[in-house]
Amino acid sequence: MSRDAKIELTWADGDYAFRLGWGELAELQEKTDAGPYVVLNRLHTHHWRIQDISNVIRLGLVGGGLEPVKALKLVRTYVEARPPMENHPYAVAILSAGLIGAEDERLGEAEAPSQGPAAESQ
Image (cartoon, helix red, strand yellow):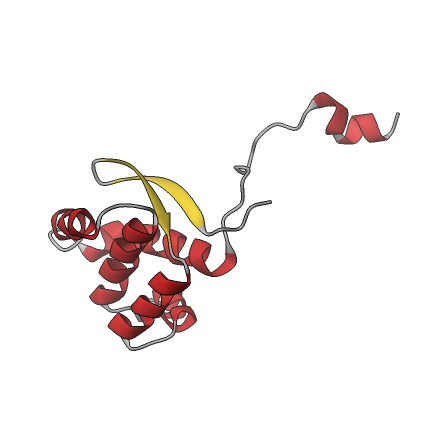
């Protein structure tokens, strides 16, 4: 299982890769004046600041390979010009993946016939 913290999401005007590596997490800490887990806790407990959402998404885009200028433009258009709760779930997903990793397999994928519980009982 790869846990490089990279996730692909359909967001804003397309599909984007988001990744919060060590450098992006350090910058998030500087921008929000809080550790990454504190920011995640604020997002989960509804004590977040609007900068928590915008910084997580912008830094996630940059870490995912987007040029910083393009990431900033997207955040200004699709985060800062929109209601904060619209992007809240994305910020939670991106930061969670950055802190605990992102699984290779999607939940709900069917198991191969030879790997299911019926195969084990034979």
